Image (cartoon, rainbow, N blue to C red; front, side):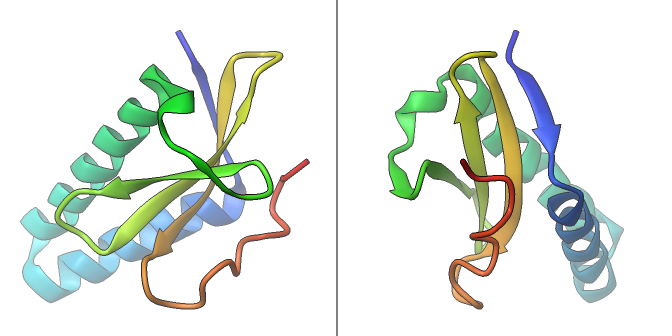
Length: 102
């Protein structure tokens, strides 16, 4: 099983975005966002090479039904993925660039 680690700022982005959706569309929308992020992370962890590199060694997977990507780095040596950001698709591109990349 692939180990999944999180950048602290990515965890904060996840929680803040879920709270935003909960306030905007009710608790169900926030929960749906969390479920879709979890599904995207499962996609990435089941086959980390499926998604192409786009910035240094970072890869991204789209969050279905929401304008977000899960940005991650795959550590081949330990077969783990590190979640770098839960990034909006059209706000401040590459703001996360200095987070945990080799």
